[in-house]
Length: 374
Image (tube, rainbow, N blue to C red):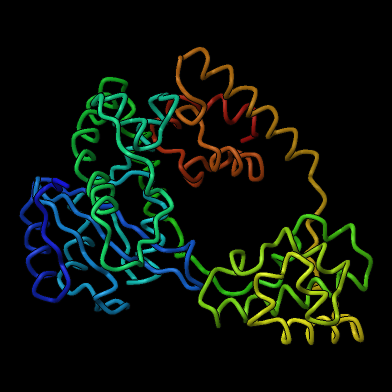
């Protein structure tokens, strides 16, 4: 396979060279690949860079984690004077914060730009096809990026993510200027930089997301919760995601049948793990049948405020009319987060409304104060 010329980064010396390339480049594109579908605690496995036309691939598995792991590259990427090109960057931002304490201060997110410009399809492959007439392969969208050595076809896929990104970014920047949407896109990109670091810690309350829980009786719910909590510990031991270890959709039927021996367990959706974990899981089920644990207390949501609902509905109706009148997307007129804030807090202080910005305040102050209340 003919791969684009690229440089692997696997040690501090490579990070030094990459940091210098990023510092000297007129632009830099960044993408990351993680292994969330294959391990209990995901981590960044690859970072791909296009620094002024020079391609780099960082093998993050060859490097430690933590704020010092990226050496001078950390400082280069943290420079607020440098804009990084990304696509759908919330996940990349969140993973880099979690693994390296690295916050990207400025990005130009091509997905955000395309969405605000009204592109019907905003996936990377779709935009590359629409703007460059290039079809990218899709077969590695669920690849295990923790596998070494990296398969050449997978590496080509990863490099493609930054090979074309600067070109489409510059084209979209031109479209954004022509559409007079520079401020709106900048605000959306700033929101990408605010993405929170991922937290994969066990959350007891996520048991309420399991479809079918409410259909079980009290004892069965106790069994389900006991298995749900045990599953997290066992998945960590096996180093696989909990949902891949034992699917959440299988838990209600398992709780109903509540097998108390491994033979019965092998007749359920848990048969795949019965060999290694069967005895342990049966003990968990027996204990839960004898003394069903209580579900964690579910936080009660306050009843919806009729005034908030009314403001929200009026704001949505106004936004729909204004977007149609201007021929723009809904988010150009009023981002969802700004609408939610206005619905709950009114329009007394528009400068405090997240993702609103001076331009929208200038355009819509009277409308927002009239609808949401000054």
